[in-house]
Length: 119
Image 1 (spheres, rainbow, N blue to C red):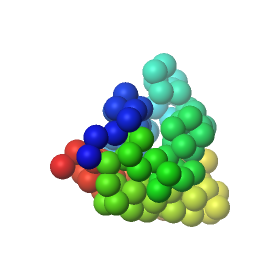
Image 2 (cartoon, helix red, strand yellow):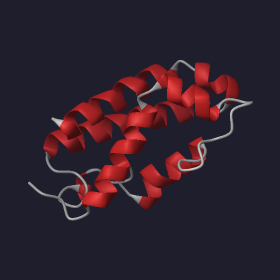
Image 3 (cartoon, one colour):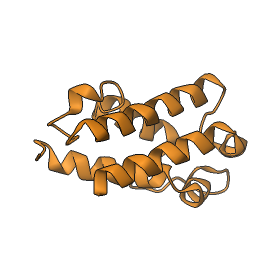
Image 4 (cartoon, helix red, strand yellow):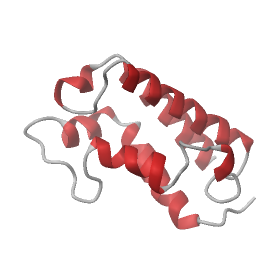
């Protein structure tokens, strides 16, 4: 299945790759390291994932637009759940929060989403 917004899909994949990489997060979101110009802060990531792309707000609604199939919808929904759980537990994506235990679930879910979307 093709998607209507291929460029948004590619941008989503880049965001997911960054979320799945603890080294990238540490290098871009810790104190003393300015955020990458092209990606911005953790809040910018959340804005893109939830609002701009709408993928985490409504994974099922992104089917055919940004996501190709039910497996991708499931992977993205799992990522949303991991991020929501981390945020509820105090994760904020900056400084010491990058050691928050919620990142393990986010990293794993983001890696699964990337694998699912690129296979």
